[in-house]
Length: 395
Image (cartoon, rainbow, N blue to C red; front, top):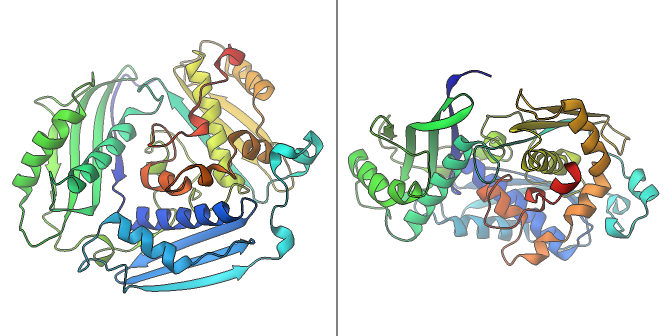
């Protein structure tokens, strides 16, 4: 393990065009599953100045007003009308209705084991789950802090502490590590989108950032900024426009920030816009679940679980474990314990996490919350793959 190094991760507020596209895509998944838990739905979104494009393939009994869902998400983000007007923007759709027999017909919780075995992966993918002891939620510290700062900026905009911010901001936090442990915040960067008639310079933004966000954000943390920490605010100047009026967005372009901030591997496949029958989405959750339980059980300080799926197979064709020299037992031993106590088959993942029914349990949907706030680690909703209920079995 490298003794001393620096690592930075970035995150984005909910109005960043890429994140906005992810949220629209997952809001559609939520709506289809609310009406029809057995729906198959795959949707992608692209957005630019005044235009939203949604492509969707589905087999479902649901009736969903796709333009209305897209407009409601944009409205909820909070853009001023002169930056992006949800009411009069153009929403273009390209829809493909799949054959009705491709719709799922039975709840996985009602299936016998041989029926679960018959549910095979429809695509081939290698997925990664990661956990470490850097934070209470067993996530890498850089992405945890970058995500938290993005949420704090959104809150400061909404509660009037920094009303000049637009919904489109980018955060990055660099952390210094020593002996594999985070010891200091090296740098903080904020790219602040601005909106409204009042002109605000970088010095005012920095002052508000330090006094109204950073002090409270790091108040309870052991690793926090110090006098050596560099803070950058709009280092290339103020952008006259932000959001889709300034740059376009597309579903699936922020996978690193949605998972481990680049600190650990991820498949690169989009997570948002896919119903639970897609292994390239739910397999990532299963891998995280396994890795987190390994670390929570004290078997390693860092753990990466790799799952490889092939067409026509229910079980992953490969399960690999890496502990990066931090394991208290061998990687082969951990791998065997995972095989014994975790069911990585597609149908079992859907069943155990109850993925078809989660959208109906939350007033504002389930999957759209992941797109806006991250798929791994601490969230504003309970994530079934963040539970550590297998610790006793793994020990």
